[in-house]
Amino acid sequence: MATNVAPVGAEIRRTGIQIGPAYVNGQGRAEAILGVPFRQGRHAVEVTITPGMAQMLLTVMPPQRSLNAARVAAFAADIRTGRWQVTHQGIAFNERGELIDGQHRLSACVEADMPIQILASFNQPQATMAVVDRGKVRVIADDLVMMGLVSGHGHSQVAQAAAKIIWHLDNGRAPWGNHTSANGLQRQFNSDDCVATLTRHPKLVDTSGWVLMHRRKGVTPPAGPFAALLTLTREVSEAKAMRFAEQVIDGEGLVKTDPAHMLRESLQRAVRVTQVNHKMTRQAFLFRYVYAWNAYWEGRPLERLYAVSKTGEFPKIAGYRG
Image (cartoon, rainbow, N blue to C red; front, side):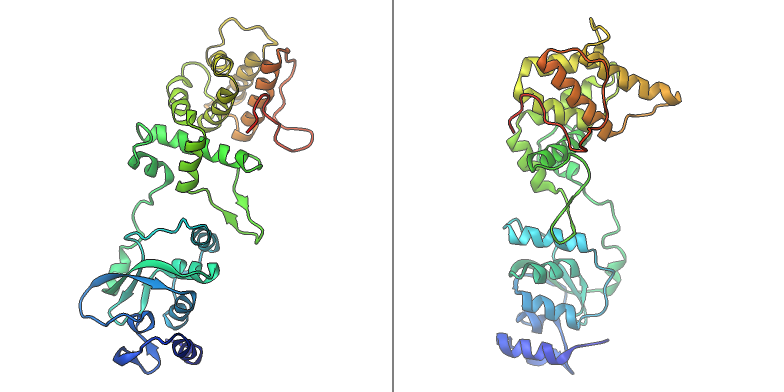
């Protein structure tokens, strides 16, 4: 196993970590680097890890799986903004005191250049890595269900998708894709962002449920974008927003140039084009919904409905001051 003993030794002397008998031939057990007592058997303890300690652990430990830069950046952002939390998922070391799980968290500690509290598990059998991170990954939609914020998984999926769109708009970005930070890495939408968006826009949960119940009665708009824009227009005018959405769904009493009719027709046309269950792209729907809503809000007819803008920028939502 490759080591870099000199820098590690210098860091140990600088920080005053007590090495003791656990540090053998320049190959340090995790306990020695973290300054915690060596114990037999599997156990876990909450520790404070400085960036220096994190770098030492990464330096002397065996090669790990390929590093995911976006994941490290997301963890580092949580550390810098105070969103880092101690959970049962921390870092783990095998019977030889070698790191077998946690390189992304440790790398984030180094990148953020701030200490973190974390749960460290020791003397874990190496064989346990065969079953770690192999199950279904819990997604934001699962978190919303577990928090009791939504009625079920379908409701949660719509609310999550809508919240991500609104989160982008709240931050002055186009409502699709991922945000790329100044260092070129993508800033992932996470559970904290989702909950914060639901808090800022309290109609979102109710709107998502309404969309889930009504979207199949007539046409089938993309659920997340539909819920996002209906939420924001409800904040402009509850009555007008709901009437517009109902017209898009049921099409009753509309004439050809009504904005809701134009949007409804464009959704139906997307299905007729291939004679299969083809869905309009989310981006096209977002543009068309806003253009149709703006015309409806201003009381003007529509002769044509565009799926893009001349400038390439996402249009402003009429009446919305968010």
